[in-house]
Length: 346
Ligand code: 13P
Ligand code: SF4
Image (cartoon, rainbow, N blue to C red; front, top):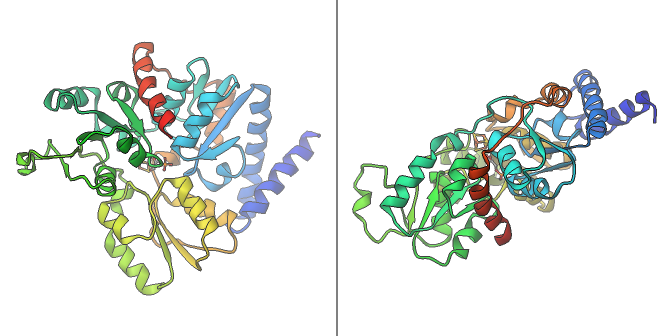
């Protein structure tokens, strides 16, 4: 195929999905960059992974695979490509490096954070282990490698309950997302304490789940009031909340699961309208693929970190081999144990 024909094919593919979501002049511009990326990706034997929160033009053009944290970790673990470009956030790219250390793992931007990953350090976990000796530590994948290295097992939004139940223990430390911990505690009939809070909860000695005070700065902003207002306006709406939302919000919703499970729910459910209480680019991506469904845009919140990943930066990452993710080997080996244990559980 000539370069011109290849560009037209990329543009047409993007247009077929995105004509209702992205204006044509923007599509033409972005298709040119996507075309360059796809060419270079083949020349450099690179794999592009795209999280479900990537902006629509990127999401629907360059990734070899899209998905939630668990699905992308699995893809990263088994690829035989030389380079993995991670269109997501740093902790996801680190997980790829942990699982497949021989590969060059690149992030299109520098210091792509996450408020949950920033909320806890390896030293915090060491202190908790001293305070609660012998209690297994379950760590959400939204953490950095040194924190994973101090943990017994990781989990994602897609398998948190299964991981906690697999431990077959009365008491579990679950870090660092206080809302996800609260949601898993409910699902597994445990009650939860937060030892770092000075509010008297610690006096309760028959604790079963020990949490931390981390929160996703996007999901913590959805409220039960948002849900009540939307249900008043659209009584038949299906409301989906990511488990990083508060337990009250999850309770008031119709469904809660990982980003990919939310996408599947919309595809497979026959409702006139949907409200997604999660990062807003995902709503646009779902709308693009499900023209027969109405995705309400009433609670639009963009993750500032996911927003750092653009087509322009991804092209630059491929051209300049930047920005490399490295994990010190001693930390990587210990972190790999907890990530691999999770992958075996499901
Ligand atoms: P998922 O694993 O469900 O995609 O969630 C990742 C995330 O960061 C949600 O905010
Ligand atoms: Fe982190 Fe929240 Fe952004 Fe997900 S949406 S990457 S949890 S800040």
